[in-house]
Amino acid sequence: MKRYMIVVAGGKGQRMGGELPKQFQLLGERPVLMVTLERLYTLDNTLKIVLVLPHEHLGLWDELCIKHTFSVPLVVTVGGNTRFHSVQNGLAAIKEEETDVDDALVGVHDAVRPFVSLRVLDEAYREAWNNGAAIPMIEIQDSLRHIIGGEGASEVVPRDRYRLVQTPQVFRLSLLRRAYGQRYVEAFTDDASVVEALGERVFSVEGNRENIKLTTPFDMMVAKTILECSTLHPVT
Image 1 (spheres, rainbow, N blue to C red):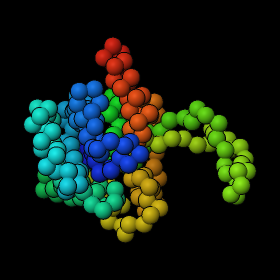
Image 2 (image 1 turned 90 degrees about the horizontal axis):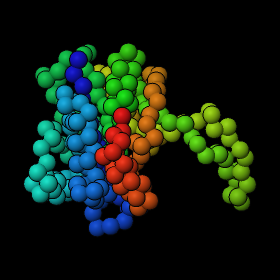
Image 3 (image 1 turned 180 degrees about the horizontal axis):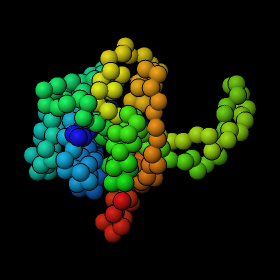
């Protein structure tokens, strides 16, 4: 069985601020994207990684790879106008002749989630092998409310019925290719929603809370703390 990972790195990072897109900002001494890729490769060096970058970032990526002596083996391909189209391009980079699609799994991971654990990675691939599609989720710790109307009224929502979704989301390669053969609609918010549009069921595994998505300066502060702590207590 072959295990692929498409890492999508097309965000502009407007909420993060700064001159560079968030995936290229430093986390410790290395760009966030490199931390993410190096973690994936450290957890499983058999993963065949496909990195999807906007065309305008290819030169910057090459410069950063030289500057930071980056050496994780991967294939780089150009992204599309939306995340949907970027994943399509990532799937196209997995050549038909290189693999038996009936014996392959593919994950899709956010470039700015640098702290996925080995347990989550293994469980997501195992669940996808058994059932076709698997996504990591974590419980909501805060109270949750539904906004009613536009004047500030709200009602309580039972939080035990909801979960926060993470990546990597993992699928049988044949299933994800079929899903991304559909026409794009705005309701596609992640890979699971694309697969569900086929009428397929998506199963879940327990995520790890450190696996945060870096979106704001506060997230970066949290990530730096996780990185510092992980040198003493690795994320497992």
